[in-house]
Length: 203
Figure 1 (cartoon, rainbow, N blue to C red):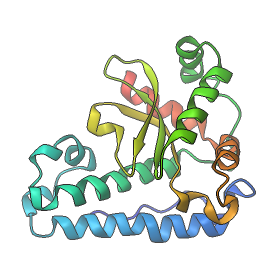
Figure 2 (spheres, one colour):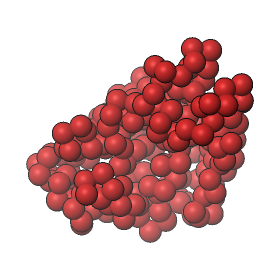
Figure 3 (cartoon, one colour):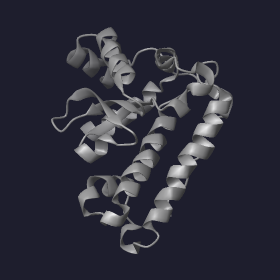
Figure 4 (cartoon, rainbow, N blue to C red):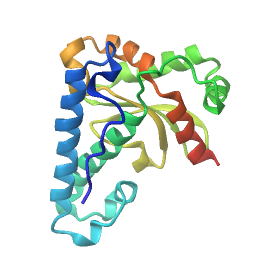
């Protein structure tokens, strides 16, 4: 059985950039629903219950057709959100000063150029989805977006930084002003965690 991870901070820790009510509903309702729905989908297929989230997502073609869509949506939602919470910090923001920062400048030319590309990806998601900084199959950094709860893991990419642009992630505070939410998010990025994510996949 998959379980809902606890937030590593209080609901209001990211104020004023992300409000406490949004964080509570986002974590306790939306993320919890993905976990519960995934467990329910796997209930009749015990041979798949011991798989990791990553194994489920990279093996979607082998998942029984009866639950494939449910696994794609809910395993994706679970893994995406589990990463998302850890990439946020009340003492976050600024620029990465470690290996990720150096690689960002190498790949994108400057941190500002990377920000612009990431912001464009996040703003351009039609409807619900995510914007990501990933390490691709060639070991290079790339900005990508995914629809709904699709994970870059499914396409063989390792996400090291992600932004949830579903309306439930920002609507209570920002309403239809997604660009304002995106700009606020840069103030709470946990670059230390992003650095750890990068080291895991590049070592």
